[in-house]
Length: 272
Image 1 (tube, rainbow, N blue to C red):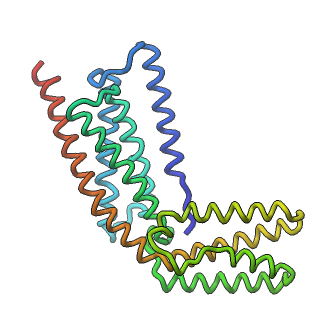
Image 2 (image 1 turned 90 degrees about the vertical axis):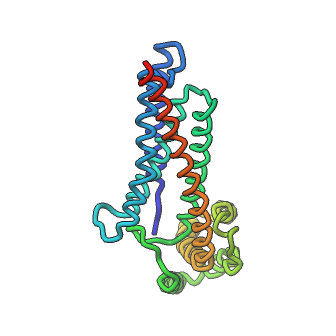
Image 3 (image 1 turned 120 degrees about the vertical axis):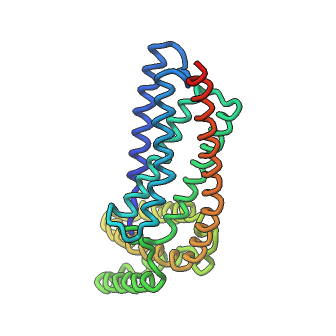
């Protein structure tokens, strides 16, 4: 399954827009928006609402396997979007003051966001279909066989490219040694080999470069499938460990946040 980062880009542009509004308010009032005033208070309300949606909606959808209201992959994207934008708004709501319980809530929020980023990275190591269902080893093996057949068919029509293709295959990391490093460090490993391949492409003429691009596409597909087969069990174990850490931290965050909200309402509203 090919993944994109559309939810990350949407979150980035949403935070950029919020920052622009924050800057306008800052310039108009010539002071940092206070947490208890209208704008700062609104940031806190909307930010916490998004965080609450992050904590509940995706979990409810994941537990409703028979539901037909949206794909799991779409809900995950929404989960990531709200999980980034909500904490960012809460951070702006703090007026950059991190004392007492509010400071603890902010710290827990940052820890949960950082943990979520790690969780997303581990999650993408587990192969899935377009609707978010995990792909089992047998299906991956079938896809590897299809990839091998495609490479052989391509090579049969271009036998002169055999040495170049073999060099590329020989340069691949040993997937049989896959462990937690293969899961957590896969981006760095792939980056190193792509960089070496690009250096070789620059030395070739235009015709060979076009064929090298085709080789790269096929080999990277085979490499990804092979790595997924070798590291599937480890990725699932890491994901289980991540859940065991992330969920309690999230519960602590929302407990502290509700206490903070109750205190804020009591001291700034009910005592007036």
